[in-house]
Image 1 (cartoon, one colour):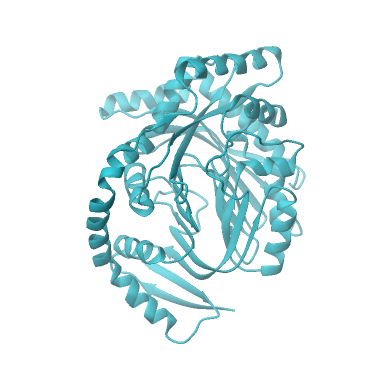
Image 2 (image 1 turned 30 degrees about the vertical axis):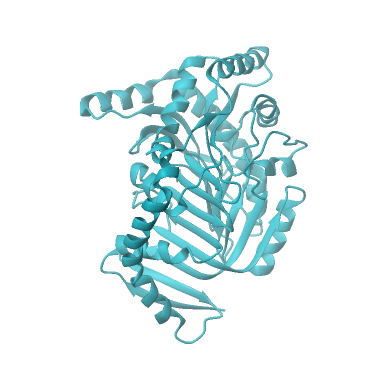
Length: 440
């Protein structure tokens, strides 16, 4: 049973910052922030879930069945993540690449405390609420701004030397990257696949970072519509994702794959030119359209016949760091179709795999050096009604605090028209914000 209060906010941004600092006392934290990006299909501008009442943690084997049972039985809000390697539960695949982050394959929790932001209001929902819990927490939250200033000074003193010594290493060096892309192109020319998303890891060992500070810096640079701060014990995700994976609103399913990237320019005229060139780029459009076809096929597995529609095709959107080409595909499902079945039938998202999907995933696994884990997986939530909203974990820093291991990965879509040098440069554009934050 949840108890609800609604509060009007004088300064929403300040309250959000205070709330995030207050949340760090808990082992289980999911913060989702749209950064006030005016996007379609959004229910909330930001959401915070903390403090697990119940939870589920699994490896990939039988993970979707266990999640389905958990979500059905809890019948409440649950928040968590799906790693890319749940592909091994969906298809006859495996993941044997190097993994130094060691996130469980799936984790969800039922939060005791939930904060839902809309405009200048926050709706607070507490599970099994005790007397005065709201008032006590609000008092503590409102004192957290002063704590933030003090904490920043302490962290600057304690971590500045370590932060300045962050040494980013490449899991795949430039020449090896070129060879691997040529190998991928050989698969394409043989007809094994049409397209595959090939990713590489950048990492730092024996490195300590301050997770919340790092997230705030990354978010301030990018201001993306699907930003995420996730804390799971000693493991963290700091994400500036611009991409929605999948959302359910009643009988409607929405997918918004991104394929096609161009850098920004400080010169207004040049920036508009870069945007226009991206919108007309044959290679980028073909990448996007191939993934749209894949998404249409995935959604058709659970859709009411004839309900799959492309609402928007290859539209270019502008973000602080890059221009992106985004399409929107929708479908309708029967009321009896289970939410987890819709996710399972579309996972992993087509924008991070390729086409045909299974063949692309096999080739990706062979050529990449690192187990993807949470990167190119998804973070999100299920509501009590079975609606859900999940992002794509890209433009993200992953951190295992115990192992002092920091990682970020980037990728690009390889097609028959790909040039290895251009693909490499695209990866560097996507990596810029994460590298800047870690090395500053």
